[in-house]
Length: 236
Ligand code: UDP
Image (cartoon, rainbow, N blue to C red; front, side, top):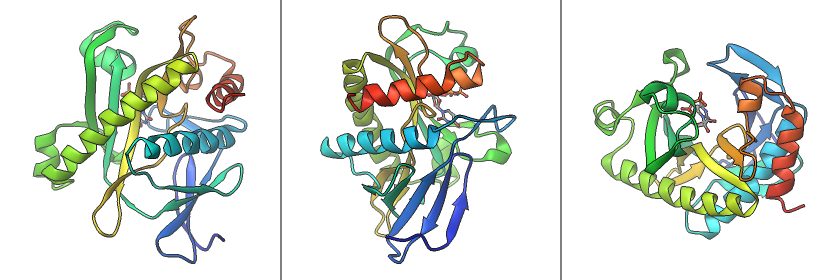
């Protein structure tokens, strides 16, 4: 499968059309941004790590009954995916307080939550991706009630599958962000990526941060950490 036209270039990936209107090629970059693009940098080989790791997770998640956009990996950095229209919602699931949740609600980072908590952010860079509730989503026509229910059911399943998977690799799944897309017939499937850019992962033994917070917070060993996470995830 060959790339045709570049459709889109985001912060971490480019998307290309192919000869098949139902398929796109995603190409992962090493560029890293944080704090609404105010912090910029590159993480060597992040594109390779995020591509490979996303595909391992998408394959596992699909096996467990949540449909995904993953078709097949083409190279280190490129993957063939189903063409979807992305729902303009970041779906965040939290198991342990961290990041914005800790700041917003005054809960110390690392505090386990009594139950997992799902939140939506409205994907609007110009507005800083504001937190949004179900009523707002419906009022703005961003998704239907049925779509919201489907997204929540899939997000809960993805959390269960990933918590168990990462724990087996010595990693605690603190929180993560996923995105969903719609196929031409309206079917909702999991899309975008799942990587140390989009998950908080802490080492089970040491609580060391094994994710993009090393870049965001200048904690050092950024490249090493991404490589280590891939190595654990791929079972090497
Ligand atoms: N996240 C993401 N993209 C975003 C915002 C958040 O992938 O634009 C992920 C982030 O890596 C973390 C989770 O979603 O795993 C929750 O992030 P939070 O709301 O605490 O914001 P952050 O502190 O990461 O900006």
